[in-house]
Picture 1 (cartoon, rainbow, N blue to C red):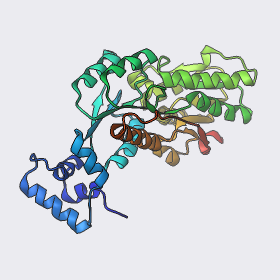
Picture 2 (tube, one colour; picture 1 turned 90 degrees about the vertical axis):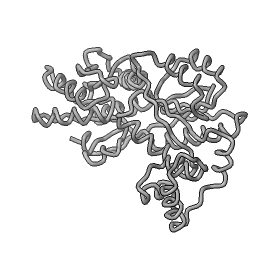
Picture 3 (cartoon, rainbow, N blue to C red; picture 1 turned 45 degrees about the vertical axis):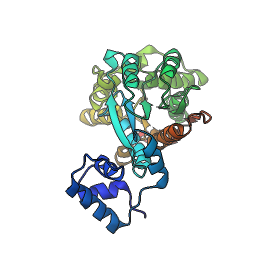
Picture 4 (cartoon, one colour; picture 1 turned 135 degrees about the horizontal axis):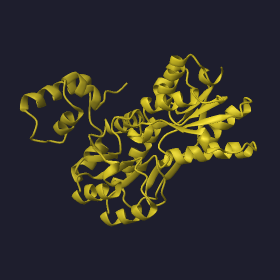
Length: 330
C-alpha cells in the first residue's frame, strides 16, 4: 500500500499540517524538522501527488470544516472520511465550532467574510434556503454535509425514510405500541426521523400520540448524548403501561438507554439510528448512515469545486439501510 502524508507524520512524530508545510516550501518549519521529514519520506518512498501540488501553488492550500459540535461521535466518523481524502493532497483542514446558541447564520457569515480558506464544509448546520442564497454573495466554494440544497454541492441522508424503516421493522415484528425516544424536537434530524416514525404508524393505521414521544431532561448537543438517552429510557421504563418496543433517535442516546434497561433489569426491543462503529459491539439494531462516505464525498466535491468553480452542482442523498442485530430480537 502506498505511503501517505499520515504515515510520514506518524513516523516523524509531527502533525499532518507540519508535513504539508514542508512540501509546500513553508519557511515556518525548523530546518532540523524539515530534514527529518524529508529523510523519512524518502525512506518510505513517499511523493506528493502532482495534482495537489498544482492546486496548492495557486490557493491557500486549506479548507475549513464548520460544525455545531466537535465532540460528537457522528462528526468524528465524518472526519475520518474527510481526512482520508485530504491526507494525500497536502491540503490543511481547520475545524471551526459554530455555537448554535449564538446564531448559526451570523457566525457562518463572519467566517466566510474572513476568507481564511479555499473552501468550506458546512456540516449539519441546516441553514434555510434563504440563508444559503445569501451566502452566494461571498463567492467561495461551499460543500454541504448532512444537508441537501440545489445551490451547492451537498451530500445528505433521507432521515424520513430512515425513521420509517426503523419503525416499520418493529411493526412487522408485531409490536404496535412503539415509543420514539427523541432528541430536541426543533433539531432538523429529529423532526425528520419523527416524521418517518409517524408515516409508518399511519400506514399501519395506528394513531400517533405525543405521549409516546419521550425526551430526556438534558438537551446538550440537541439531546444526542448518553445522559439524555438514559434519562428518557428511565421515563419509559417507569411508564404504565410499558411500551412494546422503542425507536431511539440516535446510537449515542441508545447507549444510555441500554444502560437504563440494564440498571432496571427490564429489556425492551429497540432499533436505533446512525450505525456508529460502537454499535456492532453492543449488538445495536440501527439505521446505517454512511458517515465516513458522506465525509469523503462531500470533501471530494469541495476539492473539485475549488479546482473548477463552474462545474455542475452535485447533490446526493443516501438511502437508509437497516442493520439487524440483537437489540431488536428480544
